[in-house]
Image 1 (cartoon, rainbow, N blue to C red):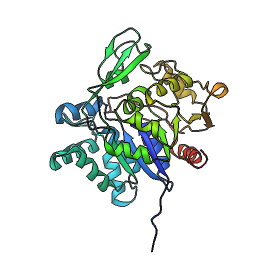
Image 2: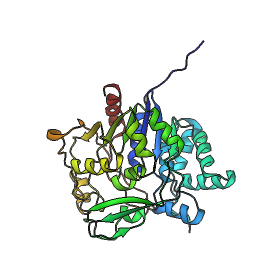
Image 3: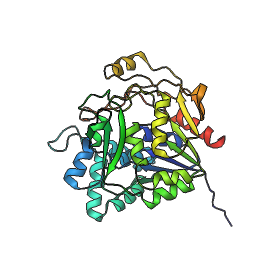
Image 4: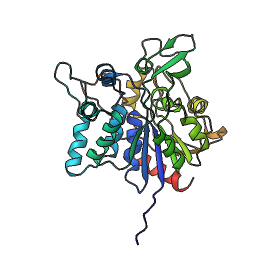
Length: 335
């Protein structure tokens, strides 16, 4: 009689390219992978998915599917197809095939939740992708001058002075976690927070009712992957300690470990970021940290160029998937 092999359970919480990078690195290892993904995005093609199709945003779900997809044979072709962004066509330019596919499937099946489940089968992904909530909600931020911004994309790409400090973020209406997300957190051995935009990719998950409560109870090792750069409009002039203070305000517990990049950012990238008032995150955790601080070269070697039809601002540099995978597995095996 054969015994089923039980792999360590790793849960990544976040959204966007940061979670994509973490999943892509981890899927090379014998682990049971789950992504819990924010559903608060309201910019770019997600705005059109919400406004024109009446669906919850799918871009972060799509990126996680692509990260975990089988890259061989027909599934590999589907992976590339899901990433394809249309550059021509009135009304379709800027949209991705993957988002349109899931919108069509939701219409055919009569359920966005079922469309997400069936898309997993099409791409033959390694692991699970779970929306943190199915509540139709919007992210809002209150700033130090008292004004409130009520849509995620206006927090991400501010029309106001992006040097203003965010005092608080909240969801309206309140959102409730999916049972699958709560279950995954409860069963996890390692929980990975980030990398990704602190206030628009990571913290929105923690604002969903049930998530911070589940994290407070979990016996898993919780690791935060510190961002490479500050973010104008969100984390202007934030140090590593500032990131931790903001994160722990919403997570309701102390993080166990922090992963910090030590590789220098290329001068070419620094000059581009400087135009947007963004700089490398200063690591001020080591001397006075209650966390296990793991320092390593985690930097990707290429500058990322986005599609011409992509209206959103994208990261120029990113963590390297393989390096991040090695570092996270080391924490999993030696917590």
